[in-house]
Length: 306
Image 1 (cartoon, rainbow, N blue to C red):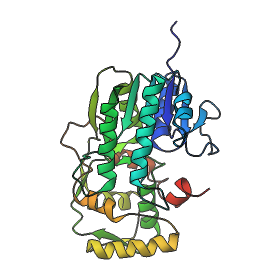
Image 2: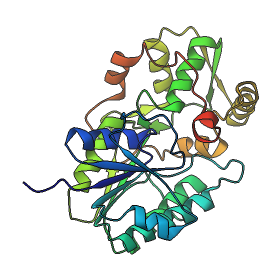
Image 3: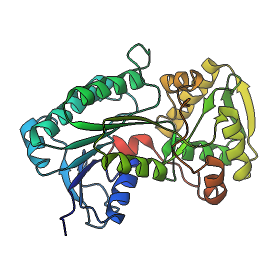
């Protein structure tokens, strides 16, 4: 019997990477992870070995990737914060890609974002496009996956929307709220990524779920399923962002950024490609609404504070 191929998953103790690592483990594939916090709580009880990113030591990073057949990359940052920038994330990603090429990694599966582009005035989406180009130019066989809004119980954004809907008397809807979202379940995304990892063809795949909702429809659906009594109030995007900033201060966190709102309003979280995922957000919500938003989840605590 052939030995199982070794997989590396960046951020396997985080969100998207956790689902990918879990899928690989259920298939009997060995997995190790690269992480910025090797001492983070291990959800796999020792089944996944841990190495630091070592972006500042490319040779050590390359050495840690020796023997890897497929590297699944989920590394990115959500926003600029205290010296952590999108520009730095792009350079770190290039360092990782070069290290993978030097180590002889045979397949690189990169989790990007829907509708990235070089001319977008949104550093999250523009930076993702730059990393895609680095993957394509690396010479490594690749699968680039472009997910829309990823949902799951570990997701911070949707959990905190539900948290506020459970507790606040009002909930702001920036503008008319008609901008569209086509959410994809994290487990479906993991299955798409692992399938791409098993291919030898160079791929660029849009990854979206079967259901398209307007932002307002999504908020109303969450509110209905958790039996929220919060009143949805339409307000100008600028006023909504002022309210969000006040909440950021109160919660000592970052709930939503101006760029994220711009991305929503530009319909960047929906795709014209046929949906590759099968789990609808509404059906998932039917089964998990009782768990969503029960506790607040801090973005800064998860990724920036020890």
